[in-house]
Length: 108
Image 1 (tube, one colour):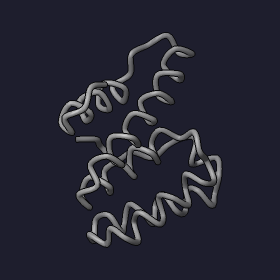
Image 2 (cartoon, helix red, strand yellow; image 1 turned 135 degrees about the vertical axis):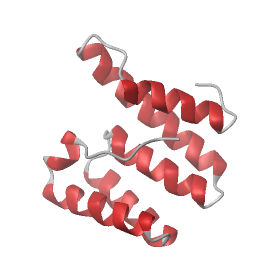
Image 3 (tube, helix red, strand yellow; image 1 turned 120 degrees about the vertical axis):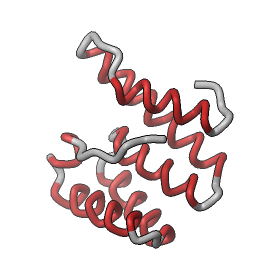
Image 4 (cartoon, one colour; image 1 turned 90 degrees about the vertical axis):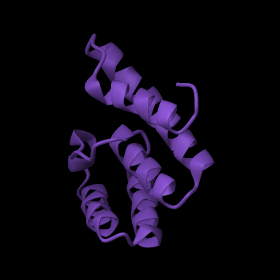
């Protein structure tokens, strides 16, 4: 599925960065309700961050919430594609979101 990485967008916002890091720790401890809450807070602070959306897609998938995981993954892909266009590239992140959607049984 998707790899976790630190987002430069989230690093610009200390509160969102805190929630992102906290979420990563909670996800590793399999406390998915708390992880989902932290993801939601990070997305509230930085709504256009594909990394936070991708992270929430992972949590939703682990919680068995396939529709929500697909929606988050699609939104993450859309934001990532916008970044890719600005940088004239097809990033490994975009490719990962497409693969994740296929794994979830959805069309990219």
